[in-house]
Length: 401
Image (spheres, rainbow, N blue to C red):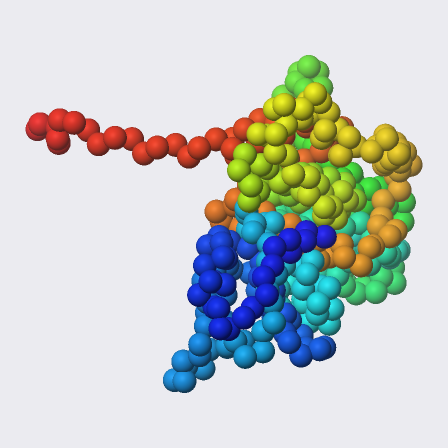
């Protein structure tokens, strides 16, 4: 947990000295009460000193603003270097202080995801905000339900799995839906395909999502090249149009969206201390405690920054083991979420809120076969670089006509 590592006792008789000792910097502020068992007041703020003055200064009789001067005993606070660090610290302490209310306090809403319900005999792909350990395939998170539905609409046009919510009875007398009439569904509802054929199509959907589109794109590219080499230019042209349709459907896929179990990344943000970067690891969609890299101090260390990152991000106990398990699962075609930590949905929401914010403060780098250590170091350099000065005004005045 990110600690509230600073604090002061509050004495109303010496409030001027008390306020002067607080930093005028962004952070998380906790005001503890004198009465035993009273709930403390937790806030995040862009200015710790100003927030304390607003809450603890002598009250204005005409104002209805919250004032805690008469009940406050002490404050604890943490200076934060970025909005993401501030949000994560607020989440951790709100969860500890108000376990029944912290979601409402932080306005935490589960992120929108795509789900393929593999327990259904004839699975379909749809948008959900609920994650369960039900062997379902979960893909995301997206910025909103609307954006997830917009992507799913174009993406599912590439395949022929069902979109209806009816119970499949395989009745030849069933009239079918509009998608089956347009030949955009294999129509298991009226036995338009075998179970094996439908399973193959679902496998194509899973493989495409699992590879974030790379598997489907590569297949069409190979088929197009083969058709060109065989001088079947008509088929090559048709495959090229199909490839363009695939590219258009995948163009709306955000970089963050991927199979939840494979959401491994690092979020980099400036820390409160000078020349320091906070590295927030994300493993399987779960946030871990940050690693603080003080480049001013590390310059004199015998170990390189890359070695420190390797030790922190890739523990010997499970580094290659985890990747091996994922590879074996992919080879066997085993998809589906089998374990859901209780905080997974909340961490995904925090990550998505930061990733889709505009402007976004900090950078995110994703793990592929290994952690991108060199790119992490270059990103740290960019975050530590001073902001570029605006160009000087031109010396000659406006150009002559």
